[in-house]
Length: 107
Image (cartoon, rainbow, N blue to C red; front, side, top):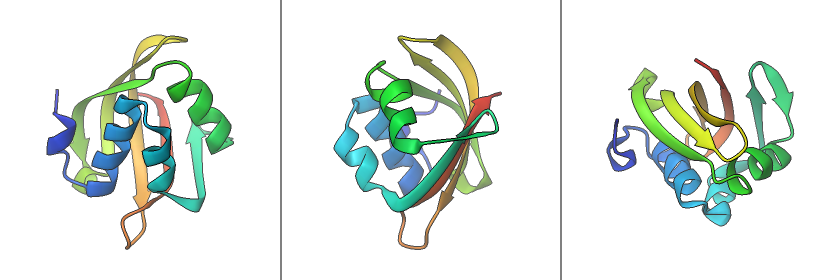
């Protein structure tokens, strides 16, 4: 596993750190106002998805591998709803270092 502090991309590092800390304020602060996301190829409402899949279910990301300059991750993701699963995450980051989109799904 890769320690989140060692992740290459600062925005992705902040994303993983916020998820693992259950820090909703930090999570939302690193997103652009119009950020979007998809889960297993289906567009989702980011705010509702994050509340359900991360914050109210104790989501946690254990990063196995990173690529594409740190903007693509393979993660062992777990939460209280689904248990643990191997997932792929891909991030679009703006020039000012905020996440404008992320995509996740089973790896």
